[in-house]
Image (cartoon, rainbow, N blue to C red; front, side):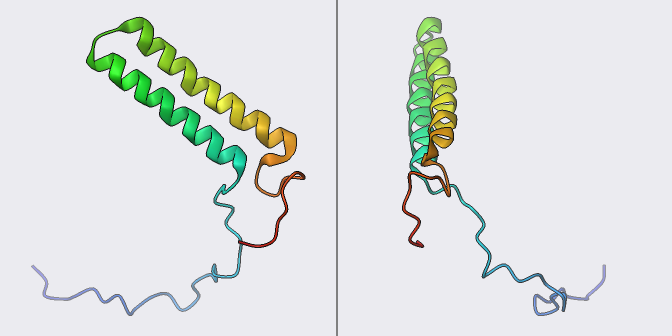
Length: 91
């Protein structure tokens, strides 16, 4: 077994600069709505799984898919990142 250590200070000299670029984390009404609706669907499906109720489990899965569709529709309507309906005033 080698006794060499790995040092965190030996980072590559040509590391890309990422502090000034916008990464687009999806902070928009469309993204938030999509995630919240999908979380509600996951909660419904989880509870239905525990109580062994297949129709309610499927209904929760339908809510999850509906969340995806609602998020996509809101993005197309201009409520996504950089959308026309949002005032982009920085963070």
